[in-house]
Amino acid sequence: MRRSRFTLSDRTMAQLLGLLFAVASISMQAQVTSVSHPQHPVTVGYERAHEITINGTIEKLVSHSAPGSPAGLHLFLTTSQGAVDAHVGPYLTKDVQRQLTAGTMVQIVGANETVHGKSYMLVRQLIFGGRLINVRTTNGFLMSSEAPRPVRARAEKGEQANGGAR
Image 1 (spheres, rainbow, N blue to C red):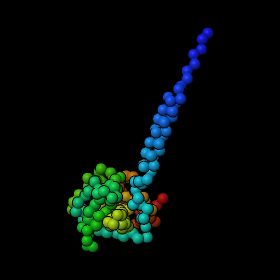
Image 2 (cartoon, one colour):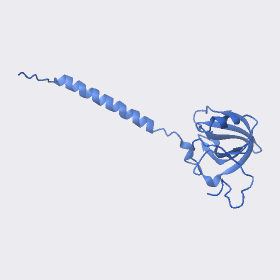
Image 3 (cartoon, rainbow, N blue to C red):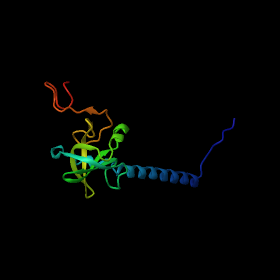
Image 4 (cartoon, rainbow, N blue to C red):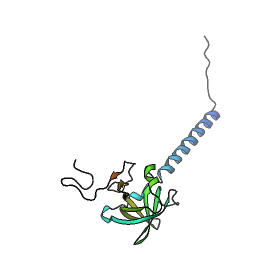
């Protein structure tokens, strides 16, 4: 029985090693690049202690934010204090987005944050048409969609103001 022996020349081995190192370095560079740009830097500075409540009328809605601004839906409001850019993020349901039109009266609870020299109201709660929409957690992190809850004028006896006895 004959055995054949497969050997690689030194030149072929060097070429294969060079190719392997090139592929590995490209892969490592791609990983470093994707890690260096966080997706939601605006939640880092959210301070609940600085929350305010604003009443206003929606002037316009913008779903494609300008470069450098927080990603997602922005409500441009007219208020008694002036114009407000209210960031509600990308997670509102389609039903809620359809109901938010120019001329709709809203109440927002949130905190102001400056990103790249521009001021934004990071909305934690959005109230309109008898509905309460939680947009962010109490720490300022965006929440995924949830079914809107009816807003009660006053908490009933023995219930919590934010949703009832548990």
